[in-house]
Image 1 (cartoon, rainbow, N blue to C red):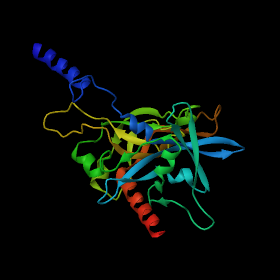
Image 2 (image 1 turned 30 degrees about the vertical axis):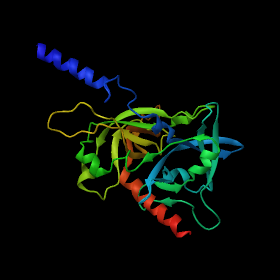
Image 3 (image 1 turned 45 degrees about the vertical axis):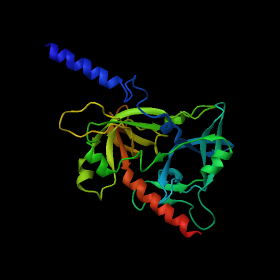
Image 4 (image 1 turned 90 degrees about the vertical axis):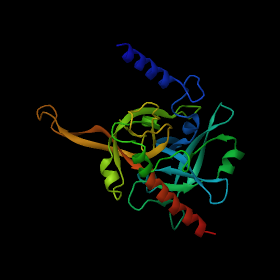
Length: 288
């Protein structure tokens, strides 16, 4: 009996300490929140918030620097000439909306994945710095897991995940404050077995506005002996939408079918983000 008590004391202690021996701090690093942005459009001189995006950094070869890209869903920007992107200001008192042009008279000014609901558009961090905007990014070489890395570290069905986004216009007035939601991976093994598939499922209620949100794995300090684990939070995908189903009500009271959310969200893995970033990198390179 005392061995069991000792085990649970150690379990609690390990779950609350950090690598320096102190009390455990945030599970999700603050700079992950700074990498997430709200996306909107202007309608009748007002801003309508329509989705979420986030910044990702591609490390340049032979250089200690990153090229920064805005990542979101194609269905959010489809048929739009431009979009507003909200950033916080460093002074802490306000936020600022920047207009990003998405197309000119002849072509789209971003790259979209060939089959997945993911786009990338390169942005200029120097412009954000000049305007005193607060931002950060997920570095692909440090803060992201490919499918192969997820599989090798047992980020599998049942793993706890988080999304950071702006559901139902929950943006904030003077500050951009992403909403954190929690869920778990529901179905991914078939994606490991067939890499031509481009999505997996999480059990997380993704409501309108959460499309384009990053999905982050929870770091696991505690694990079963003999299994692999991942001890850090990482970007593992982007929410694309939800799986809905139709329900027929009693014809006498409700003759029409009603769509309801199943509670499952569709996620594209980091691999699709990497692929579309490479496509955008080539597009920008060929402009010069």
